[in-house]
Image 1: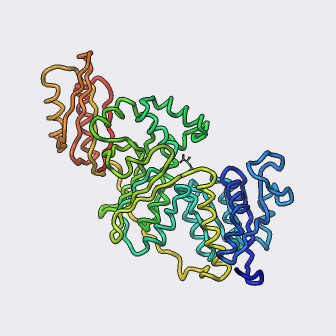
Image 2: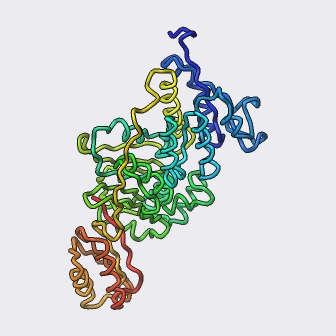
Image 3: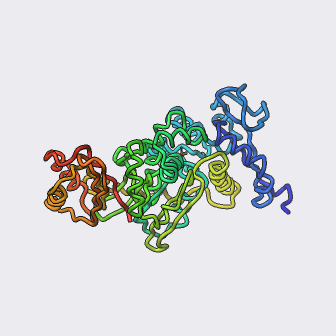
Length: 435
Ligand code: HSE
């Protein structure tokens, strides 16, 4: 048992008391005594900045702690750690920067800000020699940031493949298991409280791209220009292709894919077909998982809850405890020198090489299959398998072709030629396939 005299107090200022902020307060209320017992550090919540003082909250917080002014926290010299949980770009960026300039350590869950405008903020933290914890920005309760930064410090990481958006995974799981449409699955996600009323950031892949930017920066030790990430969401996926994929032994996931190749980094978010026995195929519902290939440790899979009050609060607390230990002198607060990052090239999507699922809607008559195969062959695309579904309407039957690895620009050229020649009845569906 530690004597009180040996206990070090670390004062916290929380900005934002939404779902995650309330979770942080609840975890502090429940577990700070045990944290103190283990670490000799007393975490004290000194102030909480909120937009409305009268709003009903998911957690009880003394009225005395509440303020409507973040400056009351940023300007309070007794506060050691500022926890930014308001999200969005502004005023979150100004809050974090002021906190760093005022000598505070900072913890944030703000993936959009770090992905889109992270470099100046990381640079400022380095110059101020302050810690900026962001474990909660990617995959909630999964400690993937610490794993990439510390656990795999001696490795070269070549692949980071993630199911990093629980809402999309919930929708795709519903479509696959219950055979419901995207719209119906989205409605179910909204009813369950997983998807926002405006689900744009989730279903259009932006949230996954934010997380990929953060993971790739750490994994590949390179700056990542967010706008160069290729992003496609799941809105246009049809139940037909999910069913056909299943028949062929594949599942469809929204994957965030980062690959560090000798030609540059591949950074892309899009619906992807994965063999049903791939470890990521068994990740269902709102769960997240990140598959990492590291040269020394080999293949790793990190799995867990990527969102929600307590998983995300767990990640915030992990940074708080880490920083508090450093403040208490149990570890050095200052890194010897800022981490040096490369500026690796990002490969344009046209240059990637992948396997492809192609669904052509064609007229059921002699020679059509031959025309498709010939055009693909002319564009250096080798066919892995061909599947034709019986149809009651000979004017439009689905022909599914799986290809061997091909360059995307060749696939696109071939599809343009096939369309131009009037071989197909509607736009061909193309889904990239990972092994
Ligand atoms: N909206 C995200 C998801 C959670 O559905 O996974 C927060 O990152």
